[in-house]
Image 1: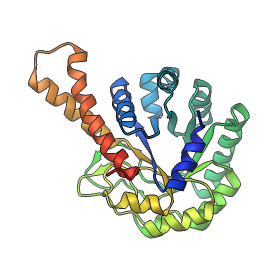
Image 2: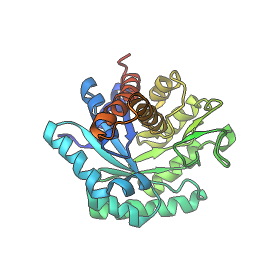
Image 3: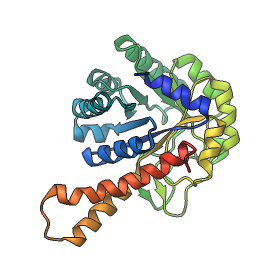
Image 4: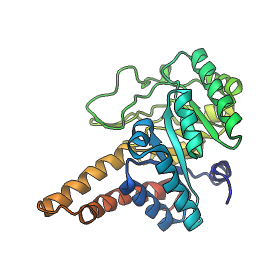
Length: 288
């Protein structure tokens, strides 16, 4: 099977984006995998430090690998927002395919220094391991929020600048880059900001590596095709799946409040998550 970077480059050429969906359990994994297979598109499973801390790094890696090998299917695993070399090493040794090294809250020069160390460590262990870096703080919680997180880059003056992005990529050697372009982690109750499509285009031209859009939940549908056309190749979705999981569980338990058999309750959560993933994958892959 082709490597993850090959699928990313193929997505770039086709002007589509690979969906990256975070999971916390086998319910989410099952839903995402079934949705991707139904549409026959590659997919990336993401787990944050908290998510893989709950599932187990080696355990989620083994599950994803079993699906990839058992079905000969392009499903990959990303360590989403690692904040230390120790966690990065844990993900690499567990068999992940890629990782986001998150130094976005740091000053640019310090972010560059630490991300460069992360790239060097990763490549020394596995040259094929992909490292993603990011600049610009966009919040940190995949939850429903009443207001925009304090310090998040929501004004154009605070967005990632193309010259800073170019410097970051040149000095760190990352394989993928995630900018701050109006995207926010989580769903804002009053509506998420709009994306700066022109800024995405400028950054992509200046950096020479595929771009990743974090904080995809809550973004208006029409912004996605525009962002993909401007240079986004991977899109992260998490909060929307958590909302769907909660809805599915509530519906199932309300319909049968006495049920205690997990496999009779959990399918409704799978259905709700799968519906969200299918809609997003269709949008990202020009299938609507």
